[in-house]
Length: 92
Image (tube, rainbow, N blue to C red):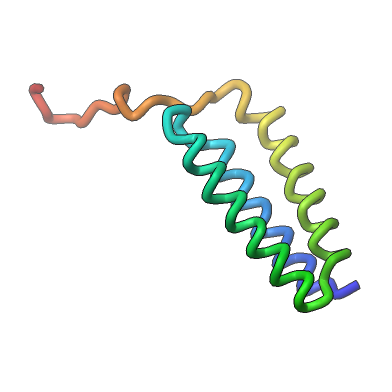
């Protein structure tokens, strides 16, 4: 197993899943569609390079890390809405 490729895919999938997890609810469907497309391109690249095993383990490890993050932090700090943002100094 190529550990360098595994860590690259692990970090890549961790970032993709984290981005989906922390996206605002109104935009989540668009982000999921975009990240599924990116995941498909990554799968295609991994198969072309012969990294099917690293792809699978990287995906599972990324899911595991994001599950732990969600259990420890994400449940208690939900994603807010962009309508809730207040700019200090604005009187609107």
